[in-house]
Amino acid sequence: MSETSRLPDDLLINAADEIRIRQDLVLVALGKREADRVVRVGRLLDVHTGTWMEDCEVAIRGRRIAYVGPAGTFAGTARETTDRTHLSAVPGFGEIHKHIESSHLTPEHEAALVMPRGNTWTCEASHEFSNVNGPKNLEFWLTARLAGSPMKIFPLPGSAVPPTAYEWGGGHFGYAEQAGFLAQSAMVAGLDEVMDWPAVWNPQNPSYERLWGMIQATFEQRGVVEGHGAGLRDLPEINAFAAAGLSSDHEAWTPQEAWDKLRRGIFIEIRPHSMPDIIGGLLERGLRDWSQVAFATDDRSASDTLKMGATDHNVRLAIESGLTPEIAYQCVSINPARHMRLTPFVGSIAPGRFADLVLLDDAATVSIAEVWADGDQVSQAKNFTGHLPAIDWPDWATKTVNIERQMTADDFAIPAEAGRDAMQAALLRPFHWDDNFITTELPVANGAVQRDTARNITKFSVVDRFSGEGKVAKMFWLGCGPKTPDTAVGCTVAHDKHNIWVVGSSDAAMAEVVNRIRDNQGGWALVTDGKVVADVRYEVGGLMTNRTAEALDAEMQALYVEAEKIEWLYEPTFSPRWFPGFPERLQFATLTCAPWRWVLVAPTDAVPQGFVNVQTGESHKVVW
Image (cartoon, rainbow, N blue to C red; front, side):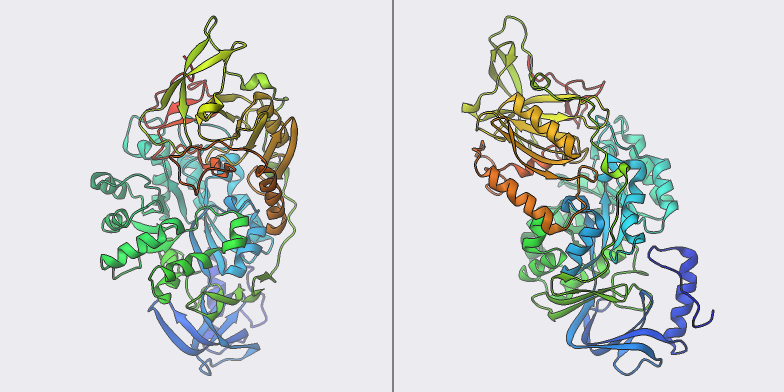
């Protein structure tokens, strides 16, 4: 290949193109072919050894690094030289486990938000959009990169599609689908978090064959099987988890749990909420080798990222929690790259890798001056300066709320048996992990079972948004939702199936919320006194918006302002971090993975009222 021959357009990783790219890099490294750019930095963190190299130069060809060494040792020439000797370089930060959907931004706008904060590559834990449109899942995650976005997204198709055998709609992944995803693109790193633990260990579980089929397909193509071990803390279960081939856990909450799982060969992905305790506890226990540890953002909204940061926040918190900066940077670079088997491409400033550099004013405080990706500068301070492609997302991404009728108050009424003036009712509260549901007696009026606001009892519903029929599961919940009369709030973000959840003090308000969300094709709606007082559009997949983080945040702040005018129910057993106030965390109260037991899901033939124990498959009436 002559020096002027066009290199492959390596936005995505393609095995055939990789050969040409690396043949070219060999000649550049030897000084026999010109580099595009040499970047000189004051010092550079070698994450392979955890040591700093002083006064270094990095030769870049195309989107890749060809040479790293002391200043003046590169034998070749370059079209341009960039002097950053006043800055320190660390590798572009990688997210080991993140749901980009939880930023509520499409991938190109996510890139514009997080890249100035150091994040240049992400392993997308894709069971959110997968549950909305499974067949188009891989196309969705690769579209922004093919359009020129400098962010590298490595999709992991969702194991939780559907999350349990008691849910349906949007997608269904098994052996054939996972094998197809892995064969279709080298960007697919493995299988997203395996969450349905009862279906892993119990051959009688209706999801057993589907889940093990996905694990088999991943093993066959040497992908990584990610785990989700929430609530699994005793040694028999931890050993069984590891024996199943579930390689990681991001759900450890205590130092002892993390320690026990590390000692059974499980890669630990620490989330910020438990980071100070876990890092402190692992240091106290004498952990010497941190190569089996990474940091995971998991879920963080655009509004929170604008306030607190992205991966940079995780690194900063780790250093504040007692880690040396060198180890903290390894936990967002080489460690996740090794675990995901991506080290030929990302994770270090080294030859052959994408030319992703985070340039720091101060390494100890994670003060970021510039970020480079694909060999070009993409940010200055917190301003994104890279390519932001304008993507016109097609109908398969933007027409995903399929309810072909107007919802009415009658859809949310819970009929009473004839002649009764009171009935027994099943109660849940958000994040109810007990073996049994709560029961109470509720009054009957006008032929329907009623809420009891005086006892903090309101009504919660899950509305199917996939079949076109708008099927409704409804029951009574404790300590959440509005106390203000004729008020309701709801959203299409309802992990992990992402039907519509709505909670309200009146059935009519609940119907109005769902109708507005349907009209907007996703997002939030808040109704009071018969009026929609605020809404937020998630028009892509009902999960994301094709707008900037700042535009989305402005809409969220308007929702919060209106929510401040509402009186919200409060259950004092909850942490004040979750409740009282606007119940945004209800987005996660519909989870059906461990350690959940009794949950409310959209109606199915097997569970017509939607009230089911996902550990056992047992269903129950909501009133009797």
